[in-house]
Every structure is written in structure tokens, then in C-alpha cells.
Length: 310
Length: 245
Image (cartoon, rainbow over all chains, first blue to last red; front, side, top):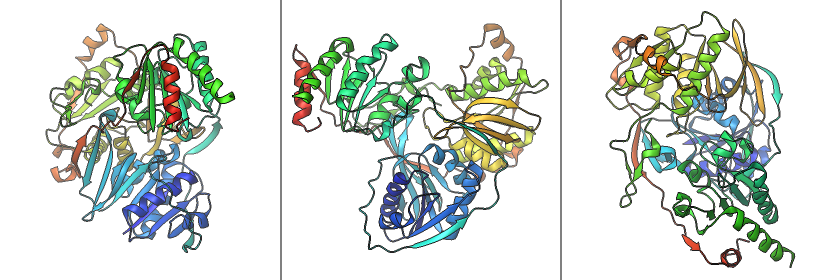
């Protein structure tokens, strides 16, 4: 059984190749690349690299292009990297491919010829495993769900050119850079998250200072990004924001609604600092301090500075 | 969707206790209704129809969007199980029957499932242009709409009708209808459809997704609460000992 993978972010494409290899050990893994290194994709486990030339990146164009590659590859499953571009057309592609669809899976595969997938349900309260009465499957896969396979330069594969058909009737009028500094929470090794425990926007400097001292990135809970707009959406940790998987996550003044926990659950170690001892975040923390962020954070930052400069 | 805020997990089985959980209109669907109501003021003569599928309480469900300003509703009650594919097929048929429409607005995802499968599949069935996660409507012409959609950068795109556009709470803040509007909503027309009337058989909407397990993830956290005046020092010490710092 063959699987086609695609991501517009090359690192994620390599991770999805690893996921596809696991789901179809004996099948052929095809990768479609808009840009990115075909030889490198083959070294990391792909059997066939399709260099995809598309007239535009509108959902209809990408879905039709991937559908054509999947049909040429005789693929039973299409794995799409869950980037914004990937999400913009994956569901549409599932409809066109007459396939079962599972977004942001933690696992997928085939059992007795039937597609299966595991993903979160009920806003992250549970993980559900599905078996689909279908021959085909489309899934999206987020960053760091699969580890890329080790590069093996001796692997050989095939490279094909694939030119997609007609352009979309949708017109790209302008591209506006996102407001706010670029921050990539998904890749950060250490993240400090700020929540409603901060009373004023300027007080966030306590969290910024801690993050800076640790060499980490600043994140926040939903209210700070969506309601108060103290920080841009790129800082938002949660189900509708970013999913983070750092080595260390320090949640400061964050109560721990399930949507937030879903976004930080993949952190290796979680520290929670909150003045409310009943805050749900403590149920999800390795270390907890029941205290006010205004007391705890300056002390913590000073201690860490001392350790760093010693 | 179920009101997830009221959900409890059985600690013994780690399974969700779904019985008796009230349902509510998905928050992002309200953003879609709100944007339609705002757009109508800019395009005289346009009307807004709300579509709702599944369950028995749809007359109740559509009251809120009608009170927000939609003109009429089409409901397709269905007692049996439906998955996203079935819902999308029903919606597409209902939209075709009650159209033509220039624009279909939908919530980007439902907040419980967070997949956005229904609008994407409905767009595929209808053959409409599909825009995922629009953040702003820039302009509406006679035959097209210009929106800003979410991508690595924000992309302003001009999309020809008919189009299906999804959106979330970055688009607007949905209004809370006043009492008068809630009362008036009770008088707005609601058309009730069924599968046969839409040219669909039970087999056409048979669910393909079978949920074989649904459990809360195991929490394997240490749950160590540090107290005392040296708690910050002990935290740093513990993190260093574990090699995290």
C-alpha cells in the first residue's frame, strides 16, 4: 500500500515521511514537494519524490494537484503537514479523494485494510481512536508528532516532475506580513506562558524577563491573545492557538482550561505558578508553586540569573 | 456541539460522561452568522438563511442565529448517527435546494472536534470556491468577495461567487440579541427538510467513522507542590537535577 505525503514546511515533510513509513512498512512512500530537496527527502525515507509545480497555492489548486499525484502514485492515504497551508485544503482534498479524514492525528495506519486514526476529541478532554469504513484516508499531522528518520545517503529513490493543471479563479491581491515579532513557539525548547494572573500588560515584563533569562520563548493563554490582545496570536498556546512541545513549560498565572492544556500537554516538564491552589493547571504540572506571579517570578529570574552567571 | 465546559471525566475508566451534557451553538458558527448580518447592511436586498442538521432540537438551535438577524432557517432533523461526511452531504443538498446562494459562511472548526471537516467537505460537494479561515472581509463586489485569509502571512484574496468561507473569532464579536429580537425570531420562517426530500438515502449518509476508544489521556505528571520560603530555590534545584536547566 502506498502513501503520499506533503508539507509546505520541509522539516515537517521529513517527519510525515517517517509517519508514513511506519503506517505502511512494505508500501512505497511518495512525497510531493513544492520546494525542498528531493534527494534529502529520499535519504530520509521517501521512495518517490514528486517535484510539484503549481500555478498558485489556493486550496482548490493544491487539492487537485495532490489528488492527481495520489492517483498516479496509487496511494491509499495522503498525509498532509498541519501547517496553515496544509489545513487550508486538507479537508477539501479528503472530499475530492472520497476518503476518510482525520485532522491533527497522533497516530494513523491501516488495520485489515481499513484506515485508523487517533486524535483528540471533546476539546482535548479525550483521545479518540477511529476505524473508518473506507478504502482511503487523508490525515493532517502537526509538528513533532513523528521523529524524522535518520538520513541514509545510500537510499535510492525516484524523482518525478509533476506539473499541476489550470490556475484557480481565486486571485491573490496582496500579502500582508503578520503583525508582531516572529516567534516560533512550536520549535521552542523552553516556553514561559502568561495568563490572567497578570493584571496589566506592562507587568508581562516579569514573564518576558524569565523567558529571556532561560533563553526561552514567551507564550500566553487565550484571554491575553484573543480578548485583551496584549500579545499576538503567534504567542497563543492552546487548541485554537499553537501546540507546544518544549523541554520545559512554565505556566504563570494560567488557570489551565482544557483548551490550554491541550496545547501544552506535549511539554516534557510542566511547572505551574498560580495563586489559586485549586487551579486545574496543577493537575497537569510536574512542579507547582501556589503563589502570586508578582512574588514568584522576580525571585525565580534572580535565582536563574545567578546560576547562569556564576 | 456538546457544551464541553460542563463535561466530566470518569476517573476510574477515564471515559467522558456525556449523558445529560447540554448542547450549544458552536461559538465560531456565531462569528459566521454575525459576519453575514453585518455584510447584509452593505449589500441591500440580500437575505440570510441558516442551515442546521442533526438532532431533534434544531428549532431551538436556530433560534439564536435567527435572533441575531438571519432571515430564515432550514433544518434537517435526523435521529440516527451522522459523521462529518454525512452532515456535509446533507448540508450541500439543502444549500442546493434552497439556493442559489452567492456565499456560504461557516465556523472554521467546531470547538469540540476542532477539525473543520464539515465545511471543507460541503465545499467539495458543492464545487464552490473554498476559503479556509478568513480573518477579515475587505470588499464585496457584484460577483466576488475580497477577504484576508490566514496563512504563514495574511493573504488578501479575491474569490468569485459562489464561495464557501470559514471563519473564527478573529473575524468579529458576535452580538447578543436583545429580548425584542429573541421574541421576533420566533416568528421567522423555519423550513423542515428530510433526507428523501433532499434526494438522499439512508445509505448516502451512513457514517464511515467508528469510534473504538475514547479516553482521557493519562496524566503522568509528578504533581509536586513546593512550598516554604525557599520554594523557588528548590524548583531551580529540581530542574537542574533533572537536567532540564
